[in-house]
Amino acid sequence: MTSLSPAARGRLADLIAGPVFTPGDDAYAVETAGFNLTLPHRPSLVVGATGPADVQHAVRFAADHDLAVAVHTTGHGAVVSADGSLMITTRRMSGVTVDAPGRSARVQGGVRWDQVIPAAAVHGLAGISGSSPQVGTVGFTLGGGLSPVFGRTRGFGADHVRAFDIVTADGQLRHVTADREPDLFWAARGGKGNFGVVTALEFGLFPISRLYGGGLFFTEAQAPAVLDVWRQWAPTVPENLSTSFCLLRLPGDPLILHVRIAFLGSTEEGAALIAPLRAAAPAFQDTVAEMPYTATATIHNDPTEPGAGIDRSALLRDLPRQALDTLLSAPEDDLMMTEIRLLGGALQRPPAVPAAVGNRQDAAYCLFTASIPAPVPGDAERIREAQRRLLERMAPWSTGGAYANFQSTEDTGPAAVRAAFAPDSWDRLLDIKKYFDPANLFRINHNIRR
Image (cartoon, rainbow, N blue to C red; front, side):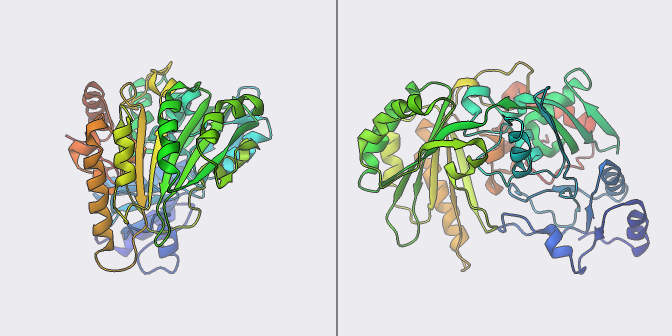
């Protein structure tokens, strides 16, 4: 851990409007804790930023003292240890402004989706959010932003960014748009936190207040028949229907199949579209119904309490019966949750304003698997090995690419990071990274580097 003199820390604290923490402070552990507890952090210094000026002072201090900069909002996507870094926590930057006539929102750097969704809903609008509303808006969007509701209809969240304010490695606060700093505008929309600290984000909203969505739950015995119907049915559905399924294996319990539905249309049309799934087998629970957009978190029912989690992912070009049989026959008790999301539609088309989000055209499905390790020696290693074997068995149907936001602690090497981008995009990202962050100050991430 980098040693900083009390005088140096004091000079920074005098510049910062928010709190500054060091190891040993009473609030240090709370300030650095994240949602995923698998990766604890021990930064040398923590700045609780209250606005862009605090971020600028913190970045300049880090550059002067040869400290990497870690940015921490919710801690859902932490993949590299922030030990020895200067950590900037953004949760105090929590302002949300909705421009209803302009169908847009402007959020500060620490805003979560559970703050944006209700603010937009007042105006009958919604943004491209993910399965969990507790995730930070900025991190979700700059890593791509894959929505289980809007994705197939509107594309990635990054496609609809209108502007952002970012503090780059030189300490400058830049207002970035497609016309102003176009290279940086392209790179950060998909390149995650490699180019600076985003202090504000502006993005488009869409007119929607209700949808037809929920889940169908089936037993282990029913799963093969239902999934055979799902794999033939899913590629035929219209773009305004998004769907996925999850194989849930809880310790000591039989497997449960959870099929998720989100349809941006009428209840009557939605019921007709999913009728083949309901006919495949009698669900022991069926929650698919009309719902307000503010209730979309109930479709996936992601965990809401912090905990340890280990995950891996892959993009698939096809999902034949053999691939489903491979998933169902996986004998791994350590594979707690395995999900397949249907992609396609607007997710495969280039956006109106190009973005660095990669691997659009070839990916028809996204595979994601996650497990919670028990607090016993060796359990995390067993889970990682089980997940590695699953990806190996599914390799015949993999594109070889990756979705940046679903990359994990196992995907931090140069080849793995590169897999999230097209080859020509990677070369351009390297050039932009070198220009805006030549010392690689922002490296506590899936790092773009040569």
